[in-house]
Length: 270
Image 1 (cartoon, helix red, strand yellow):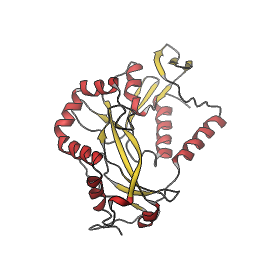
Image 2 (cartoon, rainbow, N blue to C red):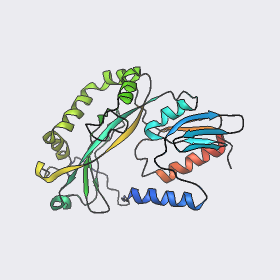
Image 3 (tube, helix red, strand yellow):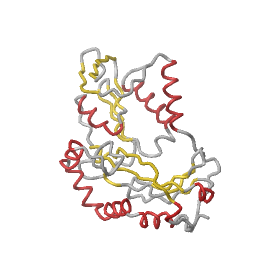
Image 4 (cartoon, rainbow, N blue to C red):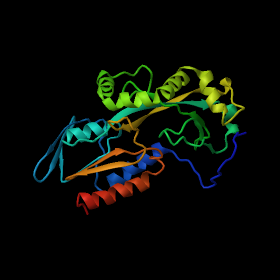
């Protein structure tokens, strides 16, 4: 059913349930003496002579070293630790439709487009999940909150920070046409469908129902450049993970090993 000029077939490609993957990660951390605290907000970081103290909504925690993997808030945590991240995290929401169960059989694997090297965003594609459900999307629209999973999610602080960052406006001047197209596709189901039909011509509006969304933590430099590669910065006993682009979840085991090795080298951890 797929349409294209050429294609690369990857028989070894697979899918998994990342909620269960995260649950397993947490289980492994706990089994080795670690603690996972959810709904805990970091409010301050103090770097002392022999320790780092992290103030949180659930009390203070001290450690000999700190690894900042805060995703959408990694730049703020970096500044909280007294370091200049050199980038601003600008949130982009990716919105999905799901194929109706009756039409899910149109997609038996993963169908991805050739990426545009000018952008870190892949573009709309089809992903068949372990449950048999098929995701269609996403787009990439500027979110009005770092945790802005819906159009109605607005954070004055987050929005003001983005608009006050010179790199945001330089980025906007470079990519405003694409930005407008993404917003139009977000607000118009027919336009979203037309983008999907480039890969799967048989898809129609009636074959799609609203799906979920995610927010990409896109690092932007002051000159407006979209960071499209990993950006890890070590500062004393702190390692900042500032940009981990897609496919970060797919590569999480390898990325985790890389961070551990960097921590061992730069933070002198065994």
